[in-house]
Picture 1 (cartoon, rainbow, N blue to C red):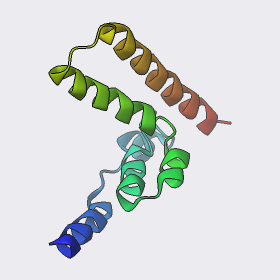
Picture 2: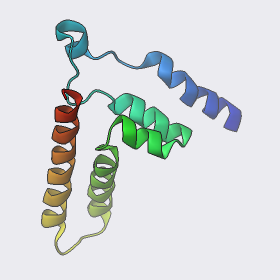
Picture 3: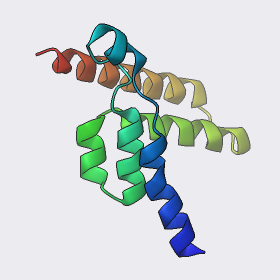
Amino acid sequence: MKIQLAQLFLMIEDYMLPCLSKKLFGFDCPGCGLQRSVVHLIKGEFIAAFEMYPAIYAIIFLFAFLLLNRFVTFKYSDQITIGLMISAAVLILINFALKFM
């Protein structure tokens, strides 16, 4: 069972979606690298995942907090959610800007 699951995760690379923006216009979109970053996370390559898409951890923290917030009520959940959303958006924009330099 474990071997089949590992093979399934490794086969994900064969079915990744191409970037339509890159194919049509020739430049990366703000989301380019997200799929490959997730594959690096699945493989356990955490530094490579960050190098591929720096906002990956902010997005993971945001989704984890939103999921946890569905079951546990936090006092400042709105402020935490907004902070995580802003940090993810800023990291995405910084990464997008650095691609053009």
